[in-house]
Image 1 (cartoon, rainbow, N blue to C red):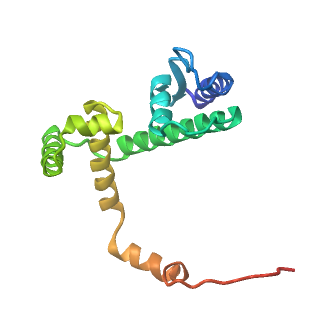
Image 2 (image 1 turned 90 degrees about the vertical axis):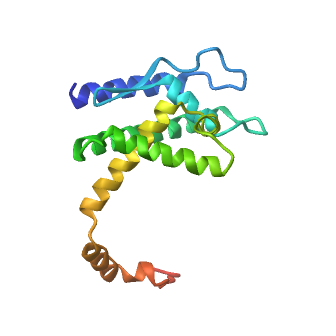
Length: 177
């Protein structure tokens, strides 16, 4: 699919999204099955709804324009996340299943120390175990990408060229003419 088709699909999805009813008593289905198509990969209405639910209920009545903005922000977050996933998949080697399984075992051991399980973590974060594994895989791939690209010399040079941002130097300006 070319980028124009993707953009058109995204615009249609956002139009439907922003015109949807986001009231306190939602209908059975708030969003269409697919709310965006990014480079051939779809973002589902269920994913969008899940992100909005993770924000939790509001103790006060939320105005319609605020609900729409929350939905747009959630959509932007999902799009950014999907673009990052696509970048990582295209620019790093796949993580072997054994390495992923080992990390999941390590996670389970850490959770056990806290009296939790993988399933309880999934329930808390409102995701499935498959989603958790996908996230773990992406984090491992990102770590590999960063390790290959970020060298101590580069970090040191960046620090030297941007020292003012790191040493607490602040400049106050009251009038610029």
